[in-house]
Amino acid sequence: MRGNEHYLLYDSQAKSYLSHPELNDGIAGIVRSQDLLPVEITIAGEMLYGVDFAKTPHLLGKLVEKMDELFPRNSIDPKVNGNTIYDYLSAFQWIFILIHPFYEANARTSEDAMHIFWRNRPDLKDTVRYLSYNGLRQNPSLDNWQAVMTQAEHELLITIARELGLKSQLELNLIKRYPDLLKFLVKRGMQPADVQIQYQQQLFSYLEDFIGRLDDIDFLRNQPVITAVAENLRHSSLEYHFSS
Image (cartoon, rainbow, N blue to C red):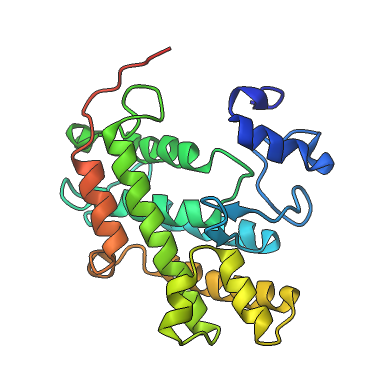
């Protein structure tokens, strides 16, 4: 993929990419990290501020480790069956996108990764579904997925806002994106850098706890975002039709 990044980026993404001269060596396949790609990012149009790049490899490693336990190559974990597979894959996708390990194309990468896990379970081949079934990122299943994810991301933002001391419902109702959260906390006397640090600590704790419970189906089914994403995936297309 290296050298072909321009095939993966929309205009807005390309402009963002070009605004960071330090990325000119390429970004495809490089995990955000202290050594290789020390870049902070935002998620969903600044809805969320990303996890600290220095902690991204740790979280990604934990996530992959947990998924390897659920989807081993040469054996079968009985927890994963035709009914639960959508929950586990949806939980993976939710956490992967929140970790946001790559500079761009994280949602598309998460979809590809789901099919890698599916490949480890040929006995469940009848459960395979395609979210982007037409080769494009425009279809009802994907639109519904995006709406669910956006709502869940906003709810997570509000949860973090409460943890950082914002209790007024009036203020919470006005928080639509991370910059709104930053504005309210700066008004209360916090420095922007301190807001970022404390916010990222809260997000890191959420992700680490969630990853630790990724194999707990009861926990997953108590998470509205996982239930909604899993239901959407379950009813996505059984076939993939490439469109040029």
